[in-house]
Image (cartoon, rainbow, N blue to C red; front, side, top):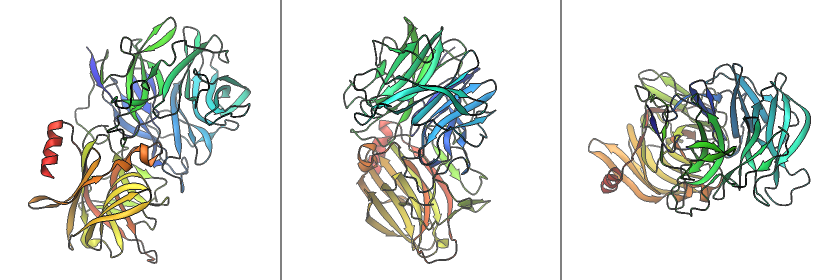
Length: 532
C-alpha cells in the first residue's frame, strides 16, 4: 500500500524544518522566532498526515523573549534522537545563544536549556557517530574576517553530550558550494556507508535559496563539494513559479530504507508572500554516493507517493495543520498546542470560564508594541480564508479594545477592533495606523468577521439576516515578507488591550468563540467574491 503526500505537508508558517525517523514514527520541528510556545513538534506515521503533538519551549524560563521583535527569538532548530533521548538544539538570538534541551518523549516536556559555551554563530545541529561520540555543527562568521555580508563558515566540534560542553578543536570545514557564497546556513551532518555528509543551505533564505552537499572520509574533513551542486533550488525557475525560496533542508530514512528530505519554500501570490515559509517534502535517492532529490524531476512537486501505509486520525482536530479551526470558548477547558501568543505572555493573560467563554486580559501594552501583549492566534495557511469571533461588547469597559487581527508584525497588520461599542477597521502599514471605517455595534454581543481573498480583505458584522459588509477591497499586500520584511508568516487571532494607561485595575474582554475557515477551491473563491 502507499499514501499520497501533498505539498506543502505543513502549510503556513512552518519554516526551517528538521526531521527524524524513530522506528515507524516521524517528527518535525520548526522555527517560531518570537511566538510562544516555541518550536512545534509535529508527528506522522505516513509522512502525509501530520498532527501537532506539543511544543519544545513551553516555559518562560526556557524561552526569554521580552521586548523581542517578531523575527528574532528562536532560529532554526534541529531535532535528533539517540539511545532513548530526544535532543533539540537551537539558537535564541534574543537571549542566551545556542542551547540544547532534552526529553524522553518527543512531545515533551523538555528540560531547561543547556547553553553551550563557545558555540558562536547560529543554526546548530547535532550528529551522533557510530563510536558514541557526538558532534556539533554550526555556522559563524569567517574566522579570517568577513569580506562581505554573509561571508560565513560551517564548523564542526566534538560535544561532550553528558555535560553539554564543547571539547577539542573547532574545525572550519566548508563555506559552501558557490564561489563567494552568501550565508552558508542550516548545516546538518550525516553518515552513510562510511562517508560523512554536510547538507546545508546557501544564498540567503529568499529567492536565491539553494541546497548543497559535501562529503568526506573523516568527520573533520577535508570535505569535497558535489560537482552537481546545488542539488535542489528553484531560483532558476523565475518569479512566477508557484513554489520559491526553496532551501534549508534536512534528510532522514524510513524503516524501509527510503530517504526523504524536508525543506522550506514559499507560495507567493502576485509576487507577495503572506503565508511565510512552509514545509515541503521530496524523495531522495543515492547515485555515486551522492543524494539526488526528486530524480527525473529535479524540483519540488505538488504531490508524491509514499511507500507507507495510510495513517489518518479518525477525527479532525484543531492541532492538524491545514484544516479549519473552531474554538467554542464556552465548552473547551484548554487550548491545543497549535495556539500561539507573542513573546512571554502573562500567566493570567486569559481564563476559560465554563459556559461563559474566554476572558482575555486587556494588556496595557498595545498589540502594535513590542511589550506584553494579549494575543491568541493560529497560523494563516492559505490565500483565501475567513476568521470570526463573538465579543461580549456589553462587558467591555470604556477605553478598552478587543477584536480580530491578521498579524504580520507589530508594524504591519489589519484589525477589526471593538471599542466603546463601536467597530473600527484599522490598517497598520509601516507602523502608521489608518482607521478606514466605523460601525455602531450597540451594547450587546457582536460577531465580527475578516475575510481575506488573496491580497484583498473584507470586513463584516454578522446579523440575523447574515453578514453585513462594513469595508472591502482593502489591500493587504503589506502583510507580505517582501514589504514587511522578516522571516515570519501571518497569524490570525484575537487580542485585547487597554488604551487607558492610568487605569489601575486589570480589565478583561469576553469572547464566546473564534474560528478560522479556509476557502480552497476556485468555485468557493468566486462565490465569496459574489457575496462582497
